[in-house]
Image (tube, rainbow, N blue to C red; front, side, top):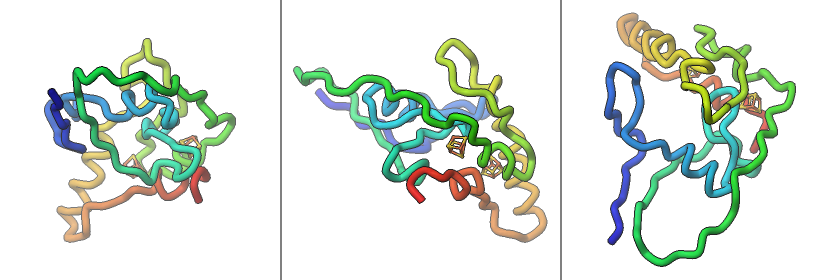
Length: 133
Ligand code: SF4
Ligand code: SF4
């Protein structure tokens, strides 16, 4: 049996999150690490990737292991964010996302752009990541 999980489908408006974390799954599968931007960073393309997940009970052999965080001293995503949505903390699986990222700040910023008649897009945290440039 295989169950596809779509990308970017919001499940919880309060927490602003999906029902399932593709980023954490990709991290556990060894495809990248979760950066200070809370995005999954790949060595090849940085955060410029789109994920989907297929849950299956097929008898697959697991490959990979969680990839080491390579953000180091970099703060490019933290410093460029116009609303300072990131705290600069590194990902820790024991901590809630709020320790690193205030998703509401990002959402309000995009909503305000729209109210001003501008396109509600930003992505500076993606643009500024040196990995994959
Ligand atoms: S998309 Fe823009 S506002 Fe939202 S977290 Fe990234 S840099 Fe900040
Ligand atoms: S911009 Fe720097 S700190 Fe942010 S995710 Fe990319 S490598 Fe990590």
